Image (cartoon, rainbow, N blue to C red; front, side, top):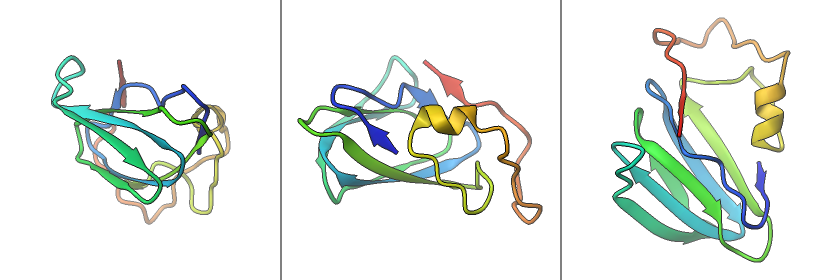
Length: 115
């Protein structure tokens, strides 16, 4: 996805999903913690960094740089259909044809939380 200058992914937590994020361009700030008002991890990041977000961890990534931030993310288990590529978080949220593969083992269905 591309995060515009000054934009962010929003404060969120995925109760049953681990997440891997890779910064492929730009620079920004990563905040994480055990509660939405307790973001004890706060780090400046740049091109080449990866961020590992354990299931249930509140997190937010903000573009603090002068160019759009390029990020890709991998969820375990998967959150999207195989071979899906969505350029922005808004695109991913609006996707209607995004059925998970039958082979993807999913935990009980807990909704993501947003701050």
